[in-house]
Length: 381
Image (tube, rainbow, N blue to C red; front, side, top):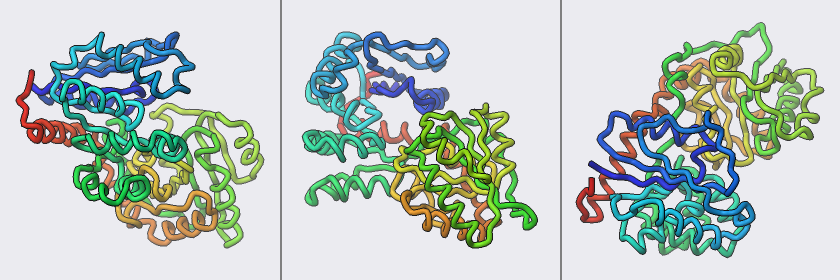
């Protein structure tokens, strides 16, 4: 039986990773997830995994170590070697390029175990963009990986074309694969119906998520004001936790803005069904699970050009990408959605099964098998 070691610093900060492990329930595979956390990290027991596979959580570095990249990761490397029999695994899956991929690279050098590595928005917008002294490390991690996982083709092309030297680009592109995140089965089990726009009602735009600068609600509001100037009557519903009060103050007094506190999925599904278009032109976005959630209810989507969701479908299939800092572009693309609304709404329902976790787990299993076959090794399980 195939044995996989997951390196995942983000296991407790996103439901994505837990859902992925649960999706492997019917696949003959043994997996361990190693999750390093800072000393004193409070783990709410409700956060804990209810998965079939082992999760090893270790408080192995100080909070200040996060500002000293190499010191922090030397501590993690020593800790994982003490807690886990590394040599018993067939393949390593690093869930981020820098934070987890640097450990996978070291383990490959020591134990000769191949690894696949995922590239997240933090890797691009923090490490590659701002930490110039770590760029060569990022290149080495990618170069030595057996497979590279990107969430979309747009992100793959941006990373390779922007940060990788020309002589290495084709090799990295060849071993890159596109694997999206999945959504909770609740949304796929309760799909909405294809929709039509009511001509006697305002255009109802929706955002679901944290109210913060990165999600770019202010640009959406400016785009709505442009649409109003073109004769559209528009309502904008915002559902989510207020993280940045300054952002909330800039939108709360607009007469077309309706704010609601966070809702559970049973209530949220009704909110989706009461609106027409989902709009989230985030400045940066690893993926954006709310996009396919909205699709499942027949809502066309407006998403950010060059970020995690861009490239999942050809333009105009389920919505349009936009330049996040350009309200006019956001308004124009919203009008494009209105012009093709019924067709796009139907496409959303038809295409959303792409985000089924069980199918995604099968893709990963195939990738793991390819890595082992390519390494010339035999399964250790």
